[in-house]
Length: 124
Image 1 (cartoon, rainbow, N blue to C red):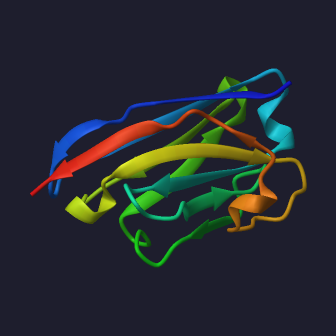
Image 2 (tube, rainbow, N blue to C red):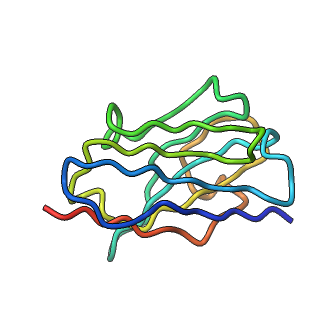
Image 3 (cartoon, rainbow, N blue to C red):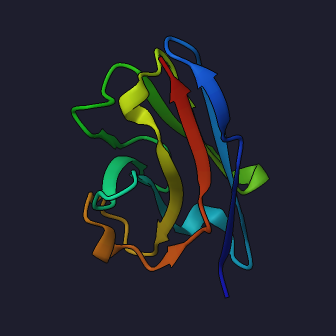
């Protein structure tokens, strides 16, 4: 059984930064492709970023490209999302997700395991 636990969310002013962490337990992180998604109130869950098992391949949504960086430390079973130049529209619950197949994909239905989410609020 794979468990994902996110942390690092909070309240930040526009232009600020936050780093989210996702700790994976139950299986070796290095086997999984990892993704970050977010869901704002009244909105569909949307893709943010994903990283391959080795870290060599990444994908970002257009809305965060150039501002967010996804990375992973397999030795620590942890995936990170560094969020810079935050905007009020980045306010959402952020979810970590894992999938066993190696392809870096952007659809939430292609991910098998999910965390409970961490709230990020960006004030203007």
